Length: 355
Ligand code: 5AD
Ligand code: FES
Image (cartoon, rainbow, N blue to C red; front, side, top):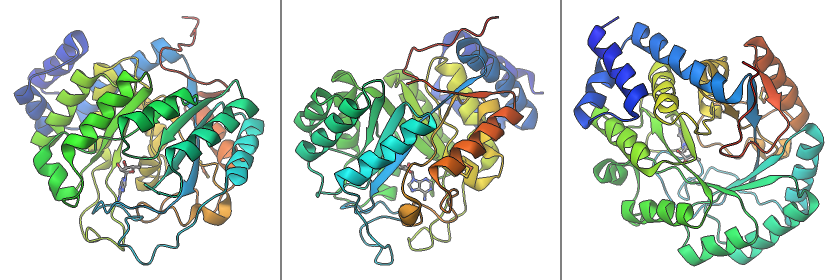
């Protein structure tokens, strides 16, 4: 192992951040040995806080209509091949009820940016879920809104909000998004969410088109400064109906390395082993956990619509049911000595590992 890079990993562990040039050195210079070293630290930090427990969140993908047009995304509005669907409030609640029976205590409502669910309607849906399942957390993942709208959703009882920053570089942001989307507004949304008391999730794709090491360094600096409660990161995967169809997928190993560095930098963070990681490699999610991830987010959507929520090609779990995924995940976690926890799994909720 390169001694200097090992020292940088130790320094990150001690000081919880690195300089821009150190990030670039570490990301550019690392190989399998440095990744294994980072993984060993990350995995023990995870175990110290969460023992062998893995938090699960059930995602209800309730609409794939989207007014945005992010160049990488399979449900962007200009994809005319996407078959659009919306779930009714009753259908959303049914998914949550089934999830509850299966052991989920966090529901993630995710959709494209669909004007058919204005904040008042979303607030109603949040209230219904909270009153049906008062012991559960509700996470929203419905994109950019104005501060007053986020405030309304928070008042309705939503606990958490996922809004990946996508990239902390304005220059790269503009290569991945059409000009009507603004980097500044996305960052403002994240600040608003955090100030309103949401447990807030940021994150980025690894290996997005045009992304260089300097951009990833910028992302890590941003995460160190913003201190999100959750970080979502997975490999970029192309979608056949987007302009990025021929772009190479992100690196599996680099995603694992950055997951480990994120756990080391933000030891308490809620860090999912994403579906994209499980798509790029059959055991990607297990490896994610072994690199410090402590959350898995399977699908609760009705099987009939799962294939329509395709952000990238070959997404896993689209032929499966809620029960299939729960069973599958239990076995996967058991294979690496972990166990799925039946709990909300809030930020700061640590598990007594008995050690
Ligand atoms: N590959 C990987 N991740 C993607 N996302 C969107 N499209 C893709 C893709 N092609 C991610 C984005 C978004 C999240 C919901 O999914 O980071 O924030
Ligand atoms: Fe869905 Fe494995 S988690 S089938």
